[in-house]
Amino acid sequence: MIGNLNHVAIVVPDLTSASRLYREAFGADVSPPVDLAEHGVTIVFVQLCNTKIELLHPLGENSPIQRFLDNNPDGGMHHLCYEVEEIGFAIQKLTEHGLRVLGDGTPKIGAHGKPVVFLHPKDGIGTLIELEQV
Ligand code: CO
Image (tube, rainbow, N blue to C red; front, side):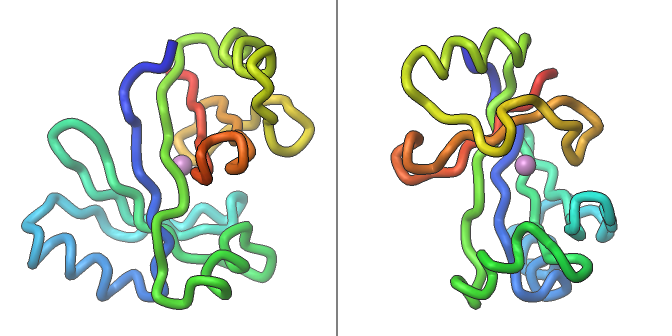
């Protein structure tokens, strides 16, 4: 049911040094920072051949990733995003298997302008999983 790995998201304490790491040491194609105020994050996109890495930094007072950074001051891997063709079908199938969708259980428009949901990390082997309809 799941398709490609759309991105791996890493929360970083310093976007400038994280961008430099990926651009200069890893030699990757790194975007300028993009502020997504409605999501409470600033994102730098690292484009790889087969997927993306998203470097996330909190933006504003109520950022959903501030607590993660407080708990992980060096930063760390935050979530994986898998692509799905039909997010409603995916939610139905996964809830049948006992997985919990975070929030009110309905898709929201994510950082790429497409419907997304997040699954409870306790149901995903300790990994926060985002599903994005492509
Ligand atoms: Co994501």
